[in-house]
Length: 547
Image (cartoon, rainbow, N blue to C red; front, top):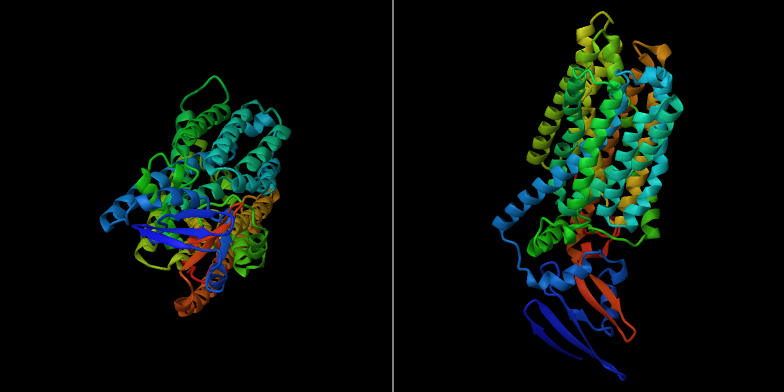
C-alpha cells in the first residue's frame, strides 16, 4: 500500500492480487481525513462508530466533492453568515407559518361573519368542525413519510398548493357537512407543515440560533391576530356584494397562494441547494450546524432502530405529555371571538380586541427571545415564566364576577403567552434529539398527542356551559397551565444529568466516526465528523443536550 499526502487530502492506494485501486478522501469538517485501508478497518471498529455511506447524512457526497476547496471560516465571516442565514431562513419560515395560521383563523372569524347562518352551523357543530380538523391532523401524520423520503422543499410546495385550494373551496360550502369535510382535509394537509419548517430551521441554524429565534419565528402565528384582525376590520367596512365570510376566505386563500409561489421559488431542501448561498457559504453552514448540534442535517433512509429508540426514550414521552396537556387550552384561540361577543363586544370591536391580544402575544415572544439569547440553558425556565400569565388569567376567569366584563376581557388577553411556551417546547424537542429518523418519529409522536388534545379541547366548550365555561377553564388551569410546565422542568432535570455524565466521559470518546464506501472490488473507509454518521443522541456520547 502506498500513500501520497497533499494539502487537505490523503491519497491511499490499496493493492491486491487482481487490481490496483486508488481512492481519494476529501477535506471533511475541517480535518485532514485519512482513507483507512480495509486491512486496518478491524483495528478502528473498536475505537469509533462505523457506518456505510448509504446510512450517512445526505450532505456527505457534497462535502466529498467540495469541502477541500473551502477554507475554515473566520470569526468575522461567521458573524456575517449567521446574520444572513437567520434573516433569510427565519422570516421565510415565519411567512409560511403566518399563512398556515391565517388558514386556521378563518373558522374563528367566519363564526362572527355570518358563516354559521349560511351553513346552518350551531356552536356544537362548530366545535365538531374544529375537532374534525384535528382528526385529519392526526391521520395526516402519515405524511411524515414524505418528509423522510422526498426533498423538504418539494413537500412544502405541495402542501402550500393543497391548503390554498381547500381554503378557496370553503366559499362553496352550503351546509355543515361540507364544512366538516373541508376542515378534516385542511387538518390532513397541514399536519406536517410545522415539523417541516422546524426541520428546515434545524438544517441551517445552530442549536443556539434555533433556540433564541424560535419565539421570533412564532410571532408570525401570535401576530396573526394583528394582521388578520385588520383585514377583518377592513372587510367589515367594504360592504361587498357577496357574503363577508366568503370574501374573507378568498383574501386569506389568495395570501396563501402568493406564499406558495414563494415556496416554490425559494424554499431550500437543505443547505446544498439553497439558492441564496454560494458554495463557500453552503459548506460553512453544514460545518457549523454539524459542529454545534452534533446531529445530521438530512437522511432519506428510514432506520427502524431509530424508530424504536424514539419510542423507548422517556424524553419522547415527556414531550408528548407536555403537548397533550398544553394543547387542551388551544381551543381558546378559536373560542375567543365568541367570548368577546358574549361579553358584549360588537363584531367590529372583536376584531380590535383580537389585535390587542395578538400584540401582547408578539411582545411576549420578543421578550422571550431576548431572555433566551442572554441567558444560557434557559428554555425550561422560560416555559414556566410564560405559562404563569395564562395560569393567572385562567384562575381569574373562574373567580371574577361576570359583571366585571372589562376585567374578564383583560384576563382573556393575559392568556395570550401560552403560545410562546408551546413554540419554545417545539423547538426544544427538535434540538434535544439526534438521528434523522428518530427526529421525524419523535415529531410524529408529539404531533399525535398534540392532535389528540385538540380533538378533546373543542368539546370542553359546550354551549350549555356558556357563558362562563367553568369546565373548560378548570381543565386548562390544571393541565395546560400547571402540569405542562412541570413536565418541562422534569425534561430539564433528566437531560442535565445525561449531560453531566457525557461531559465527564467525553475525553475517552472518539471525536470522529468511520464511513465505509463499498464497490465491487473493495471497501474503503474514511474518517468523518460524527454528525455525518446520522447517529441518535443516545448512540453519540458526544451529543450534548441544550437545556
